[in-house]
Length: 109
Length: 110
Image 1 (cartoon, rainbow over the protein chains, first blue to last red):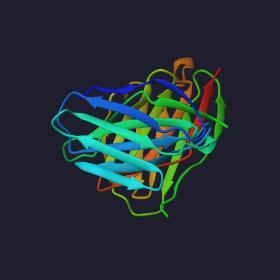
Image 2: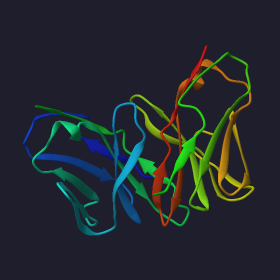
Image 3: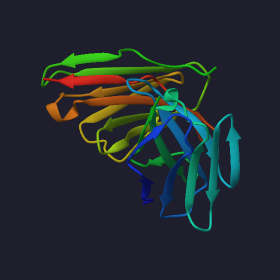
Image 4: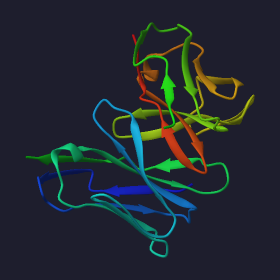
């Protein structure tokens, strides 16, 4: 079974700072997902990637398949970015995911 | 936009009650999932379904069952609710491995 580790568990930043959240996994995968969950809210899929890098607005996700590692970057962070960010990996054909425990990000104004 | 709707946002039940959590998706997705989310443990898969009447156990199926009679609807059943089933329950559907989540049901079992 794949083990998914995220770091840090908690992160506090000032508005405008550059944020990095890391995710490592133990077994080869078909895809890696980054998800966002606001307090009391549902979960939104931010990225699904299997190689390289993806960018959406101020968010950038990268993955290194050889090192079994992914990073989520937030440029020019804003208080509305405050949320739990969850890394998840999928393998095989049934789309079952293994989740990390999440990183709680708080961005102060 | 894909919509995944869970029938209740908050639910309070008594120990021993039979509990039904309903989930409906509007995008004709074949795959549907039930997860529970607990502090410090993250999301854990209870059951998933890859077609009507087809189901597969996830990582923590004990104490739960599911029903999928129609493609758009996936129900989670707690046969006899217990206090350790107090949790946030999240339904999801997927196509090409991208997940779409409902807003969750916070279930409290007293």
